[in-house]
Length: 123
Length: 123
Image (cartoon, rainbow over all chains, first blue to last red; front, side):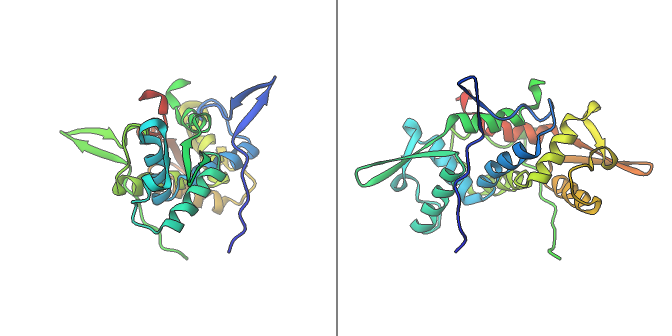
């Protein structure tokens, strides 16, 4: 079993405001530190099953889903839970236990940061 | 040595027009096939050194760079070439040999497709 660690989401504090890392890639080179952070985000989406689970949460009515809603991706329930945990550790999903189920929602600021970084039109 | 294969870029032909895959993740679930394609794109950016090289090409004046311009990321020149090859195979960079050097440029349609998929505001 590999040891897992929780990654910090790519958010920087500036004067008390939370601003997403990083500028569009055409605007400036990524620092080594920011590249480490952002590569971890991309790694979370670099698996087809994880990406499908992420898209199922993102497109679910109400913007959140429990495991019971999204488990039909052709892998076992423990594997689904493992992938959801990876997405949460990478900061891309948030989770909240309510009763029997854990509900997952997309972390909009983190996903917006990834999108903005790849938005090459804005520079 | 692992065997490498070239991935098709995530572009679909529709009525003769080239349109990028895929809709924003909030709009619809990804199909298994699209998830395979897009996960391969994200995997290409899931390494800190590759991401820094990609950002160096993207932010280089004129929008293209040769290995000689961008090799200062703390790894050997063969490793830089290996990473640039991976980015090219994933469809994120294009390359052109001119004289002694190979010049790399960002493939805008592919990167725009990744950005659009993560742009959750648009739905």
